[in-house]
Structure formats: structure tokens, C-alpha cells
Image (cartoon, rainbow, N blue to C red; front, side):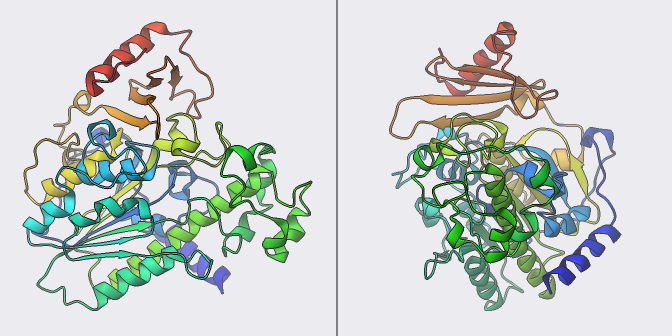
Amino acid sequence: MRIAVNLIVALIIAAAPACERGSSNSQGPYVFNKEEQPHIFFIVVDTLRSDHLSIHGYARATSPNLESIAPKSMVFLNAISPAPWTLPSFASILLSKHAFNHEMNDRNGSAFTGKILPEYLAEKGYLTVSVQTNAFVEPLHNGFSDKYMYASAENGIDTRDATAMDQAIEWLDSHDLSNQKTFMFIGLLAPHWPYDANNDFFPDYVGDEIFISAPERLMSDFGESGDGGMGLLYYNRIPYGIREILGSPASGGYYTDARVYTAAYDAEINNADCQIGRFIEFLKEKKLYDKAMLIITADHGENNADHEKYFAHGGQSNGLYNSLVHVPLIIKLPNQDRGREITEYVRSVDIMPTVLDYLGMAVEGVDGKSLMPIMENTGEVNYEDRPVLSYYKQVGGATKELSIIKSGYKLIADTEGKAELYDLSRDPGETSNLAAANPAMVEELKAELVAQSGIGLE
């Protein structure tokens, strides 16, 4: 049955018109048929790196539902997260603040200052509803005045995303929304470690061409330096069909080949995409989709087998590499009749002022800038006034790390003297550190980081 459904989805996608490609500056103005006050549905997928989505060219078909909406959406190819883990990233998104400009950078954060997006929307008459799967978002729930729901794992089986979508759909279905506009904020968690070996999509990816062609990378230290062994894929806990393909692990009873975990991660991306597809189908059935604003992004990415440490992020992983901060961003505006792929760098902190700009609401004291001029292609965008910054404060420690992307280069620097410089146009995987060869660029970007953040760097 799943094969037949996937075939139908593939045929629908193939028949759909392609997104316009290229820089937004290479196209003419885009005039939207605006809704005065649309429903707004905002989905954040935890731990979803952009380059593992088929909508962005990844060879595995991980995102058929995102692909299905792309022809009538704005698809941002270079969106950057403010932080490499959940709490500061969510706070930055809802506050429109760089992570170094708010206090939500520690795991025991229990309060925050500042006005978040749902509070602005409540003033506009919106019902504000949050449906979450990650407990780290808990400190932000007070900003939602009408409903806050949390979907937890049940019976030891991680069903959170499906439960969250059930809750979201049931809430919408039980309310008369004809004269009451709603802002619904949904957090999904499927791509976050640990991965479910019983995921329906996992068998498709184990032993496929990507698996075979990728180099084998052994995670010999993962049980100690990752999560202490929690979440490892043990031979006796995975389905028989996968055991037959992979064979027995060499030792320890669990698999140490990073390709297995990459396949499992990709399968969980497909799982999250499937839940998004359920939600989109519901909105269409209820005649809510066309006139609604839909926003889909991620809080951060995941370091798979790109940099040490494998399959980790935030405090478990070193650095602010693009594997950790390059995230998807899709915005479908009300009544949008054609799509565009936008190549300019944008930031997650730009989302909140974009929503408010669309509604004609002014916002001050934030770090983000509205994306409406970019989407409308008015030519009024000053990219020098849109610094692409990410930040990580060592949890429980003093080290602070910052990154900046400018003029095709990316600098990662910290308060202990670290400096890594990458030419993203030639080295998108950030494998060749050019800091020693180009000290002038390092100093130029470091000076801008200090000026933007107020944080002293060695």
C-alpha cells in the first residue's frame, strides 16, 4: 500500500510546475493577493538539516510533501539558524533576536524577557495555540494565550509527531474558525536522535545506492562521546528485513557504521514530512489551505558523519558548521499562485517580522528583518544590514562561539582563540580551513562579529 501511495505522490509531483529558479533579483516584482488577516500555521521540525531534503536536491526522496507545495511557495535555499540546539533557537525565532541577545542559552532556562510572536498576534485578535514535542520549548509556552499542548512518548514507542498532529487537527476540527483567525505553532521531533528502527521508511534506505556509494565510517567512540550508548541501533531490536540486509554487527551487538544511522536519520525526515502531509491534506479538506499562511522550518540541523562528533548537535557537537545551522525555510503566503526558489542568505530571526509585516504591524527592537521585500522582489533589500550570524554558549561553561557568513566566506570563532574560515562556494562541506592562508579575511570577519555581538574574541 505504501508503495502505491508513494507512486501516486511521485506522479503528482512530476506533473506539478517547477519552481522558478535562481536569485530573486533576477526576476521581476511579485505582487501578492493579500488576505487582511489569514490563519497562520507555523511548523518547526527539530534537527532537520537542509541538505538532507529531496526538495533541496538530496538523492533520497525524503520530502515528497514539501515538494508538492513548493510550486506555490517561496523556498529559501540558504536559511541560517541562530543556534545549533533547540531552546535558544526557538527563543530566537519567536523573539526575532540573535541568540546572544537573549538569555535562553542554558538548559535550565525557565524564564525569558521580551515579547514573542504569539503575543503580537493576540493583540491582533488571533487565537494562539502551540502543539509541541520537545520539553525544552516549555519556557516559551506562556506566550500562547489560548492553548498549549505537549505530545510525549507513549509506551516506550516514540509516537510524538503523530500525536502532535492528531492534537493539532483535532483542535482545529473542533473550533469554528470562520470568524476567528488562528495562529498555530507546531513542533515536530522525528529527525532528533534516537532514531526509530521500526520507521516505515528505514528499509527503503538501508542498502540503497546512497548507502552503497558512501564511504564506511565507524563510530568507534560514539557510545562514550555521544549519548552514552542510548539510542544505538542494536541487532536484536531492529526488524528482521533490515537484519538480513545489514548482517550482524562486528561487535558490541550494535551497528557502528555511520551509514546505517544516516539512513535512519533520513527515514525520520521522511516520517516528519509524512506528518506535515497529513496536516496539509486536512487544511485542504477544510478549505483552510489556500488563504492561509504556512511556514515550515527547522530549529537547527544535525552533524551526521561530517565533523566530530557524529550524530550530535549543540553541546554534544563542536562548531557552528552548516550541517548544524543551515536549515530549510518554506513560506506559502495566502492565495500564492506561483513559487520561487530564493538563493539569498536569510535568517530564522527574519520570520517573525515577516509575519507582522504582512499583517501591517510595526515591530521595533528586534534583530530580524522582514522577508516581504525579498519575496516581492522590490529591490529594496540591503543585505549588508542583514548579518548572517549564529551563536553557541557552552552550557555550564564560559566559552562562547560565533559564526558569520559574508561574501561567500564563513568564519567560526570563539572566545578561546578558535578561528576557522571556509569558502562556501568551493567547499560547502566546510572541510578545508583557510584561516592560516587568509588572515586578513579572518580579522575582517572577526571584527564584524565583535561589532555585531559585543562579545570579545581572541
